[in-house]
Length: 252
Length: 99
Image (cartoon, rainbow over all chains, first blue to last red; front, side, top):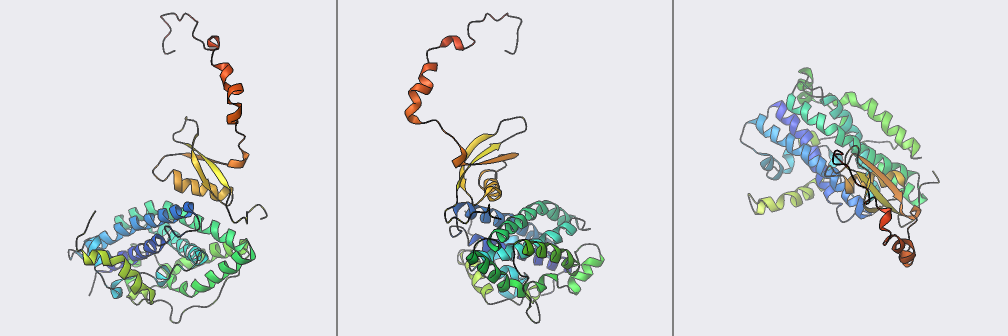
């Protein structure tokens, strides 16, 4: 399958948002308090809105007649282009809050720059979403501070949550020919240029939360942008897609 | 950060929303949160996600001093039969508008 670079890029960002949205949806009725159920559902719905715009646009650019639903529900695992971080299981609340901090800090930096994209759909999506993601990062920051600098147990679990997901950080800042060809046209953001700002923010939160920055990465990092995923991704897709596949065109 | 609670059950907060500039904050409900900063964020998510407001207050429910139902008679009944406290005995000149 050869897609235009722009369609691939829109899919990558859209799949990040879609898959994380699904993971956050899994917290509904399971969060520590009802208020947190609502907060995580809100964040998930923000991401779902971004995903809809991006997937629809990918389908439009691809010009093969695929809608947002076709792309969300009828692609197989190897066609999903999200980073591994967003597909990792929720596990305990601290792991999920670590994921929110690591990902939303990256996504905010990305969208801030994407607002200046030469592509009006991408810049428009980013300009709207940047306010949403600013809140997502704040929400995650508040939790990481409280869990890290809370009780011995919450500190231990927050530190463990960070260690669990740290190997997936490097992938966020990977770049390749698809991205670089669009960077040259002023359309895409060079993800590798986001690292310094990300480090600055995350290190600041970890220090205030009395947490230690973990080390380590997967070797080689990544694969998600090429459709290579970790084991939980297949289970996630099975749950996300089974209704639509069992009842094609179902709506309510 | 000793002000951050470590209680197992989060305290209750009362939420007030101002729906537009110029209006008063109105009580809309309550929620649980571990501390004031999180209460404000929870209030944002629970009570303003459909564009209900432009400003939020959260107040610890424990900080509210309420009148007691037992005191209802002595507190409120004496006001019931004092019609002269209402400004209804003035003749209003016909020229006065918007009153």
